[in-house]
Every structure is written in structure tokens, then in C-alpha cells.
Figure 1 (tube, rainbow, N blue to C red):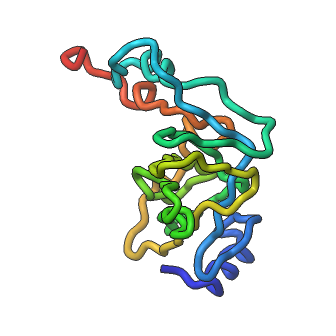
Figure 2: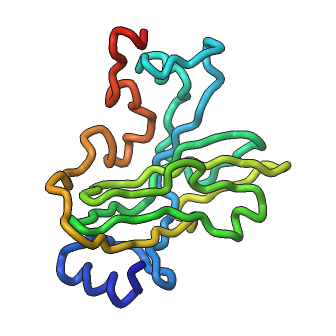
Length: 185
């Protein structure tokens, strides 16, 4: 894991781009302006091989907000306010803040890894697992990104992801990235 001093050095060398704050030996992730609520789907099944079926899961995105009340059991996709660029040989791992976990807010509920070459805004999956509504505020700290240096030969494929990274790219694009083969339909 990289220290704050190593992170600052990488920023100064342009091997890492981050305009946000450091918290200890990690990047402090704050809530950005894009929120994507999930909605009750019109069907009982979301077909993960069909992008239109996946898109059916989402409500209207929110862009002009200052606070948002997240109800118990609600899941919400949220952009991180500051963009991030990782160079070759760097990867990250997203972690939540324990203060928020103790009130029932799960900050990143699935894959925590950010791969080398990432360039853009991260998306966090927020889930209210507590018994009360939680009021979120634009710009509030939500988590941290721990950074790691990879050792050994590096992959030549460190390009940014073609489907994600823009602040408005919050929805799942699973079926677009992994089209179903004819025998999976």
C-alpha cells in the first residue's frame, strides 16, 4: 500500500491525477453531483444478457441536488466528485468509512478494485441497510481509495474503460460489455 508521501510524489510526477484530499494514506472520496436511483422494474426479472432489461432497473438520474434522503433498503449509484487517473503500475481499492457503516450505509457493496489505467469519475454503489432514512449531502466524505503499486511485468493494456468513467456513466453496462453468445439466450 502506498503512503501519503508516495501518493504525493506520484501526483507531482504526473503518474497519478487527483485533485481531492488525502486522508491518512488514502484518497478521500466525496459524493459528487450525479446520483442514479434504482427504480422498481416493470418486470420481475432483469435479464443480464439484455441491456434494455438492465436499463429498466433505473429511475431518472439526479444532477441538481444538495441533499437526498435514502430510505431503508434503497440502493443508489453515486459519482465521486473528483476525477481520478491511475497510471500503469497503480491500482486502487475502495473502502467505506466506518462512521457511515455504523449507521447502516454500505458505501461500496461489490468489487472494490480500480484497475491500472482508470481515468474518470468512480461510481459508488450505496445501500441503506439501516432502519432509518439517511440524509446524504453533496460533497460529503463517503469512503477512501487505498493505492497499491504493482510489481513485476506490467500489462500493456492500461487504457481507460470505454463504458465508464464519465461522471454521468453510472448505470450498469454489463450486457453491452459482455454480449451473450447464442447458446446463452
